[in-house]
Length: 331
Image 1 (cartoon, rainbow, N blue to C red):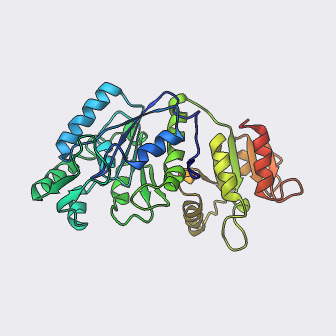
Image 2 (tube, rainbow, N blue to C red):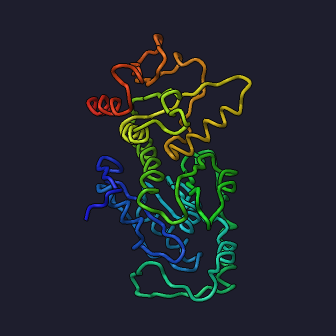
Image 3 (cartoon, helix red, strand yellow):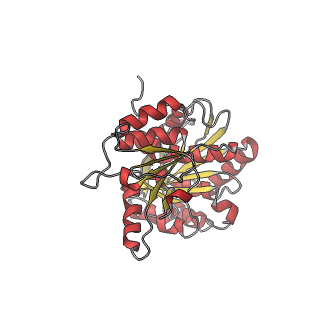
C-alpha cells in the first residue's frame, strides 16, 4: 500500500550512500530506514545492527565508514550521539542523546530491555546495568572533541519540539550553529521525516553537487492572515517551492524594535519549521536583494528579477502562485 505521507525524490542523493545509525534498543529494521529508502529510491541506504556496548558500536561505525565512505550519515537519538563523533562526513543528528547515561537513568532504562525492532542475530532482549550506564557516560564524554569550522558546516542537529526524552538543543548549539527545531516527538514519524529531515538532505545534496537553485523571496506581508496564521494554501505552496527553488522570507528590519525580529523568527519556526532555518532575511532595502523572483504585495521597480504581485488580480491566492511555478518547472 502506498504511503500517503512519503513522496519520492528520485533526483536527490542519486547513487550516493546514506549511512543510518539507529537509536538505543533498535536495529537496522528501523522504520526510518524504510522512510529513507522510499523517499530517495536512487540512493544506497546502509544500515547495521549496532552492539549495545558503546565502544564496540563506535569501532564498528568507524570500520563501516572506512570501508563504505558514506556521503551522508543520519543518526537518531543514541545514533545521533555516535554520528557527531564521525568527523569528516556530512551528518544529520536527530534528537541526539549526548547525555545518554543520564537519559538511561532518568527514563527507567535499567534492567531487562526488549529490542524495538528485529535484529539479524535473532536476539530479542538485553540487560542494562550500572556498568553499561558507566560505559555510556564515558563515550558521551568524547563528544564535541573535534569541532572545527569545517565540521560546524557539515553537522545539522534536529530537535523535536515535543520530545519528552532528550533535551540537548542548547548543548548542541553551544558547539554547532545549525541547531534546528522541527515539529515532532522523540521517535521519527513519516511527517517529521518529510518536513524535518528531508529539507536538510536537500541542502546537503545541493552543496555536494554544487547545485545552485533559482532564488525566490517571499515578503512577510504574504504569509499571514488577519489572525496571524498562515494564509490559505501557504504551507502547500511553500512545500512545493522548496522542492525546486532556494526560498527566503523577507521581513522588515526596524532599527529600534528587536522584538518584532524575534516574533518573526518565532513565527517561521512554528509554521515553517526546518525549511526556514537561516532563510529569513531582515532588510528595509528589498530592491538590493539579488534573486530570480520576489513574491510581494508592494511594487519593486528596482528588483532585478521577476516580481510576483501577490493579492493582485493575477495572483489572488497561493493557489495561483503554485500554478504559475508549476508551469515554470523549476526555472
